[in-house]
Amino acid sequence: MDSAPFVEAYQELSQRFMRLVNDLSALRGLSALSFRQPDESALLRGAMRVLMENHDLERCSIFLLEGEELVCASGLDWQDLLAPASGEHPARKPMTFHLGQGIIGMAAETNRLQHCRDCPAESRFLPPDKQLASGSIGSLICVPVSLDGRVLGVVNVSHPRTQFFSEGHERLLQVFAGFLAQILANWRYYHRMEQEIRHRTRELEQALQEAEQLKRRYHQLSIVDELTGLHNRRFFFAEAGSALALAARHGHAFSLLMIDLDHFKHINDVHGHAMGDRVLQITAALLKAQIRDGDILARFGGEEFVLALANTDEQGARQMARRILDSLRALQLGAGEQHLRVTASIGIATLDVDMAEQSDRLEHLLRRADQALYYGKACGRDQSQCYTSLQQHN
Image 1 (cartoon, rainbow, N blue to C red):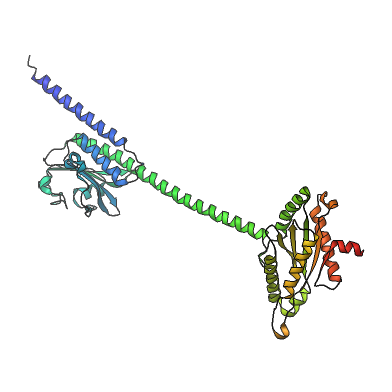
Image 2 (image 1 turned 90 degrees about the horizontal axis):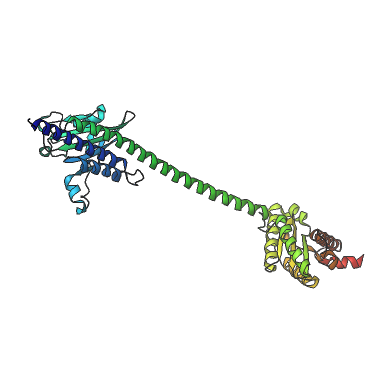
């Protein structure tokens, strides 16, 4: 019995099986490519390498569609596979084709595979098909890389021999191009999302920074008087209340000064509100220059200021009031007939034993300082008075 037919059938079956294994290996290698790679050209080069390593091809390349033009994004030949350590090729302008130009352009324009079995004799093959050397190309297949009918680019494979590629190559390359289209689309979508996330993250970080700045600004505005730059009464009640509670707990001295500018309405009426604002600002600066670390100064409202002095008894408070009054008297504002004299009345109250046990001690201390202040105004202004003096007078 002649065994030759069986041997031939076996050999053909074996060859088909090996081609199938190579085809599956190529698809498996393509599916293993990570679309998380930061560079699109590296992704495409990896796809070309997978194709070259599993099939007898001389060269393969991929052109991406940019507007009406196909631009070479990656190309690989056997020399690149055999000598990967030879270094990068010198930079050169990428090869380009217009839609409909040559076999590559026709594949992109028609969104259909184009197979040139004998390139030297084929009219569709541009001699030398742009920068490709026509003498080294016998067979060429161009397969559109498309997704949902939209062409992303074209995969090209070539071999020096004419009539080299079979229908099996065409089927493989169509499946390969379909896989590659999905991978390329996923890569672009993933990196667009990454860019969008980074952009949104930067916007969010900027918005948070702006919100934090607004928060700090709001907090600053809520506790600082805009005209004088001093703290306001909201800040004073919180800080002075804590300092007074601490003094009461440890039996330390604590004094309060209420300071009110004399005849301030007259200053506004005669010299104008601009001068009145200037007087308030100068007074605030003068008071800040007099206080010590730990003292709490605030604009209480209008032309009234309040100063809390920790670890300060009545004698120390009197000395502070004297320095403030002397500084105000020394001010020289205006000129000639417009010369302006600034004075103030100051009321002084000091923490005593009875008040130390009260929960609303700060309000009591403020009322006493206010009573002493108005007693000073009744006695002629431009002076300081203590609440204890008011008690003795009564």
